[in-house]
Amino acid sequence: MEKALSTFAAHAGRPTAATDYRPICTPVHNAVTYTYGDMGVLDAVFAGERSGYVYSRFGNPTVTALEEAIAQLEAEEAAIACASGMAALHLALLGAGATAGSTILTSRDLYGGTHALLNTVLVRQGVRVRAVEMTNLPAVEAAIGESKPTLLLIETISNPLLRVADIPSLVKLAHTAGAGVIVDNTFATPCLYRPILHGADYVVHSATKYLGGHGDTLGGVIVSSRQRCLAIRELQKLIGDVLGPNEAWLIVRGIKTLPLRMRQQCQNADLVARFLSEHRSVDKVFYPGLPTHPDFALCRRLFPANYGGAMVAFEIRGAAQEQVFGFMDALKLVVPATSLGDVCSLALYPTHSSHRAFSDEERQQLGIRPNLVRLSVGIEEAADIIADLEQALAAIGSG
Ligand SMILES: *Cc1c(COP(=O)(O)O)cnc(C)c1O
Image (cartoon, rainbow, N blue to C red; front, side, top):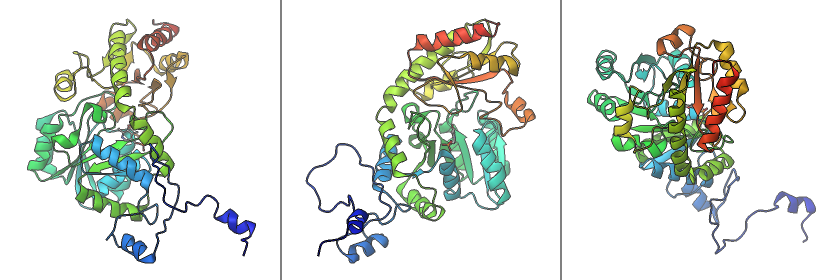
């Protein structure tokens, strides 16, 4: 019998037979659910006796392609993609043992969102959070001894003053005391550093930044051993903070050019940092690739030659917030917007964005002054970025 139009419409585009051709890039699998030739197979997949997909909250082929790519980049067995960097941090913390009564030792100058997540959501659930100056190893050792943390949460390169963490030494201190280590490697990317190779137990990324790289996708990833990822996957199935297949596809696409972008962005950042450090309207430049940065030696020891990261922060001499806003409004090429890691250069005012969650007093203690600007240097021609910064500094009169 001829099927009705409505029946055809409901099944439109459904794949039917297997094919002998293969696409050369990962397809976007938007299907929420999967079917097999017989119910026995579906049952075996549900039971975990056979690999496969049943429902997109449990796993999705496009998302798996991203997870496998990230695991390889970070030199680890497995990875789990999440809806955002914050979702990845939250899930990694839960999976790594952030439960009531446990203590997490973090850096003082943590990403604002992470600081807020720990000190509101997790603290309310009975987790103890203690902050320490991560670049001060004796202070970290003392804090570990006193607070007996379950976990250390470290950022490879901090924000916005771009301090570099001595991850091998911190891992040693943590493991000696039986604590696990989560490293937020967003700012460094695996092109600069692979924390797993230096003993870290979990690596987390906001894939929204360099991994995606084009400012068009929100996402996050957790990287860890197969066994730990299996346990985290069980949590994720229940919490449901999964990444969508379209987002996974865009991040996979971004990753293809990650090494090229990082090479160019680090080279540009180095030139921008040198330009700024010689400019008479600039008080201070924070860039780990500059010999004046407190972590220059560590940067040279941990990261490949010529890779100092692609973030640069600087203080505009004598500028109050009004002049900083004037500078940012005068930019014509560099985009004054939150976020980082895009192909386009971005400028941000930490006081109002990345460190909004901190009090004035906390910011002052961290050394985040009201004349501080943070740049995420893009892939444009370095001379064009520098010319734009120069004209915007001149526009506020102190140039
Ligand atoms: C952006 C960022 C996050 C949060 O990631 P989202 O994708 O915005 O949720 C966490 N850590 C660092 C270092 C970041 O830069």
